[in-house]
Length: 257
Image (tube, rainbow, N blue to C red; front, side, top):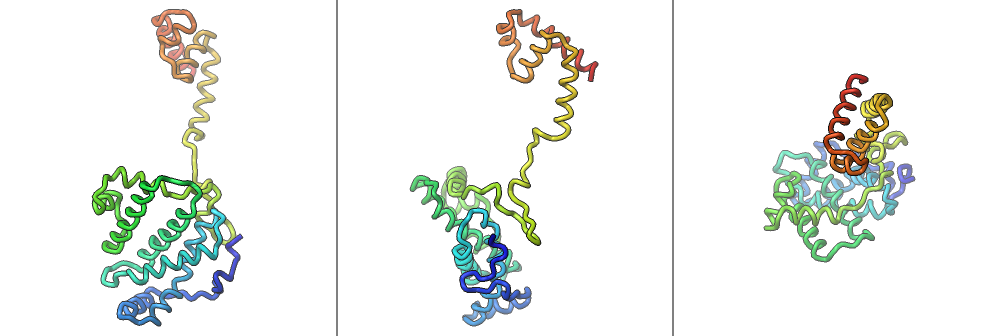
């Protein structure tokens, strides 16, 4: 319902300006020299970037105006902290900054509660992550973050995973001309492939030609994951007999297949 909305936080999104890479570069250089008008133009010229990012989070039923404002905070941070001396596109640096700000907002408003110590470690991890992004102009690894903090990698990983906002299966990951692809559209079940389905049909047909006892043993052995000893005790024969019947049944099925 948000995709056709034009007015966000008093901004007419249909009239947002788009800057070229050259214009961004020029404005960034002026901003670093203290030109506040260039800074304002750079921020306004990248609002479409914020708009495109917040659409990823609309499946959470959050207020779009709130997400847009939070995303703008991330954009401002990206403008103020971007290193013009490195050969990196501004959008490459700005996107994770904007997403991080939005996720932080969603995390702080999350109904799921975690321990104070875990949350504190997660916040420090995110702060270290932002520092490393600013220094390296790229996404750091968990090992980098843990090393910067002097913490164990496993502890940092657990803390950061604990504050991740659950994702709805109906959250859009891509949208074009009103058609959306949702998270659930990208999930697959490797246990339900056509090959496995056909294989199960063939096995069932082959088992029809076995004796009742052979079918029972094969079913218990390979579908219920029972050992030969467990099967022997359950049907009242020796383990050696179970082994012999199983081998015979498998050989018969191989010939059928």
